[in-house]
Image (tube, rainbow, N blue to C red; front, side, top):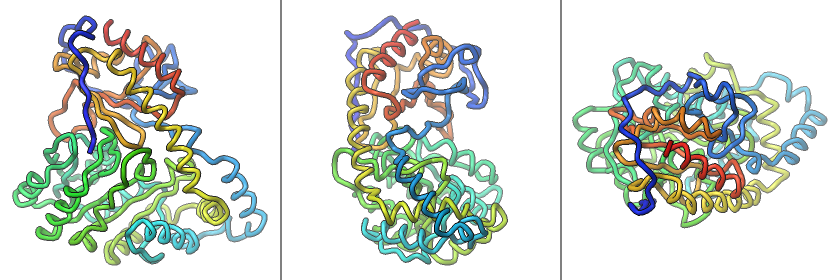
Length: 412
């Protein structure tokens, strides 16, 4: 369960007048950002960011650089001919076996043949859209939803409908009503440390979602890029492990947040027929994920302790989350609320209704700090007062300074 905090009215700064509506295009660069390099909640960037900064770079604490470098050296020294050659579309057998084992020990029995290696989990989304959707098909999503998923489904010509929910996530009763009315092809969800809100769907709701899928014949695409980054509370099992969801759920995973995003290694676990359709789609897309990257990841998993590395990273992230939580009341306007994630990378804030975070962004950028406006994350009518903050990319001291600048920018 994700808790929500609220500022006191007595802690307010002055409130700006309601901003005029505006559209946030993540691909446009603001004039302020062309002059400066702001902190993006908190990460430093080496080039001017786009307005809204739609992606969060994987921060250096999450990259086991020495182990990865050693894995590449060993692979190229010992099996260079294989590493530099074509591979199978499904993925290198050793990596698929390692991924299956990691999935199985976390409570979801999986064999190597159940896994398709993809070029990042974003490709997995694109392959599923190709394999499952026709123009005009309906897709259900969380509200708000991971932005790149909305883009992938829109590119496939799907009609995207948001499922009502609350601070814990999807409302299963509302989900079933929509399934009956809309007859969707699938539900897409990031149930653990969701992007953008950081919230986690409780176990009881996961079971209920699985039950809806079983009764109504609905597919679930369960995206889990952040699940290993838990730093408090108990792990909640994947929806795919609940009764009724076994043959209706595709589970997506990624090494981007725990190993290195530049390796572009993701995977999907799916029932056989759907997995074969994704293999055909991948053959048309890129034939296979780069062999050398797959072999290096498999070598790293064989020679190093990824779980111990993740534990160390989670400890760092907890300190940074705590620093951000400690400073939000003094930075955000009176009446603001925010989530308290138990892991992952993001938290979500909602300012009073009179605030438009898209319109305010240029003013905040002039303080050399940035956030992501919430509007683009909504499939339907956006909440213009929302924003996403990333707490993992800078030190607690830098986060404190960033919050001071954010408060100054919001107050004008």
